[in-house]
Image (cartoon, rainbow, N blue to C red; front, side, top):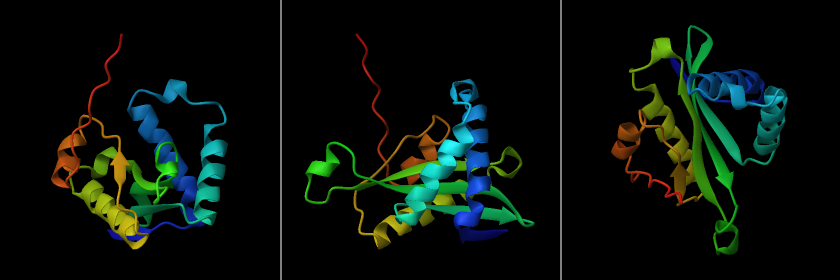
Length: 148
């Protein structure tokens, strides 16, 4: 097992794992037909601007897990003195390698990356299964939306 920061050469595998993540969550049917191309181009652009990083777990030369950090500056953060925040995403481990602490290890690497970039506000969207993990890292539970 090897843990490393991803490079541009790893983006194809990252996009592949992201697609698997959506499919396993039951959202594969919602993805656009050009999902792979769109995500690849978006991530390449973010990497080129140092606004994203992924941390990977490699087992026997194969990437089996990842976690990504994204620097965002959307509303309302863009109006503040520090107009950005960190977003943790793309946390995924192939099913055969789960329950080994990889998601936590990779998420901690993402949080360290944010600290190095002086990003103090960090957000994420956690699945029901991932909420206990993120609670151990200090994240508050998500609030539920109220519909009319």
